[in-house]
Image 1 (cartoon, rainbow, N blue to C red):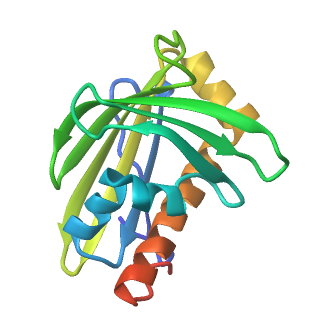
Image 2: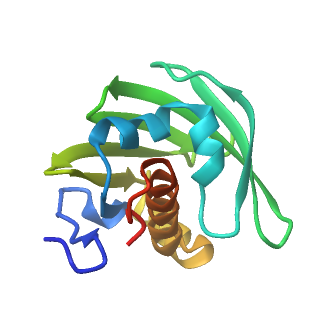
Image 3: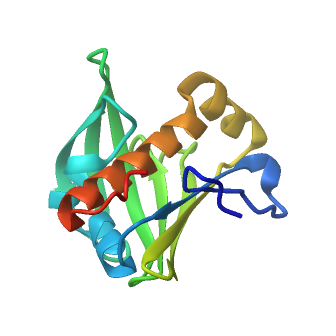
Length: 169
């Protein structure tokens, strides 16, 4: 169920103690929202929490392709990141393995789904960590829930600049 800010209530699953689930309704067509995840020229404009910027070292959007990048925190800290795309079903679903480097034993899996909701798109980001402890650390040490919400908020704001809508609500 969507609240007035565009956020959705998460659903439960068998691995819920290892998961973070964040959903948001974005006032834009599904194809455009999906494209914002598939082209590096878009990703570099919005990826990450508020105040972060992204420098891409390499980007290959295909199954088994890699996005190797650095997120730059507002305090000047650099965070190396590595994503391998594991499933692509345009324009409905993206699955990926996300860590700090290739072979990272603490890498987590994320599945993003894009559903048409009238003129809007409902995006759900479901992230499953290898253990409950790693999920808890991501929440407590790195602010993963708020960071995820900010990232989807940045996506909504970016898409609004393309469509001229109020998608950032």
